[in-house]
Length: 242
Image (cartoon, rainbow, N blue to C red; front, side):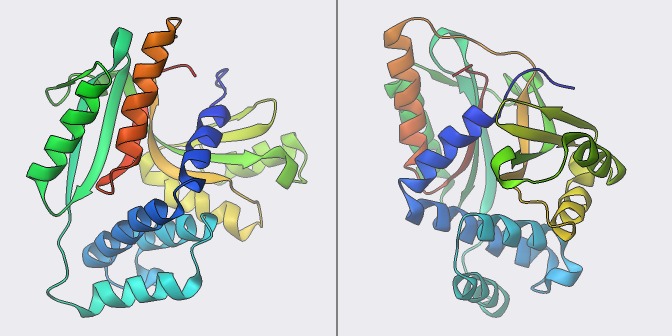
């Protein structure tokens, strides 16, 4: 069981997202398009699409907006093809950062990501330069206030569903899965009526870096703010202990 709370970071991310709902819908819209192109428009036969739909609903995306996105991706042969690109680098004081993007213009995206790092005193590195410091895992966050189940009963249910790990924090429960088992575990919890604050395949740091210098904290926030404001950026992972 892990001893480090991820919920603070999740809440921080959601606060950023809530401040720019249009950005969130753009991000999820692109994920819907990619999922449909990869596995078809029927959620019953496309687990990745089911996961994205669940993510859309968790972010209060209207059902008609979700349906339109799926139909558009399925029916428009000339719709935009998005390319998955990942950037790795360092922020101030050696904070490791991974940036996941979906883009239709990789030159634009590369320039914007490099600019964000540079303006925050960081630098983009080569592929593999920091990813070895992270573990790719399915991560599900359950807010204690929204879940009425006893912690032990919840733990048994998530482990029976195929999860690798379950931890209880002050204000949340965290469920960790193998990436290949994420969809099955998420769907099992959904069917059981367990409310999920966040559910996604993510990159979890093996170790964390604490920033004590005010200037470094400002620079790190500058990088995150610039990346959050870029529509091509789907997710940012880092090992800054906020």
